[in-house]
Image (cartoon, rainbow, N blue to C red; front, side, top):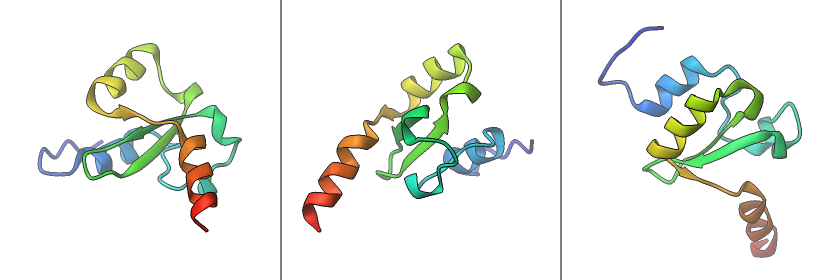
Length: 80
C-alpha cells in the first residue's frame, strides 16, 4: 500500500479494506454485517465487521463517528 500523507484518509481506507463501501446498495452481505462510520465531510462508509480487527475497530471509532445505517435508511424512506 502506498502511504501518501496528502491522500485523504477515506481513500487510504479503500486501499486497506477490501469490503469498504460508501453506499449500502453496494453491500455484498446484509448491511447489518458492516460497521458504519461518518467521516469529516459527512461521508458515510461501511466495512464488513469480519474484516476489522479489534484494534482496527478501536482506531476507526477514535477517528470517525460510528453510524447507525438503519436510522439513515429509515429517514431516507420517510423523506421520499
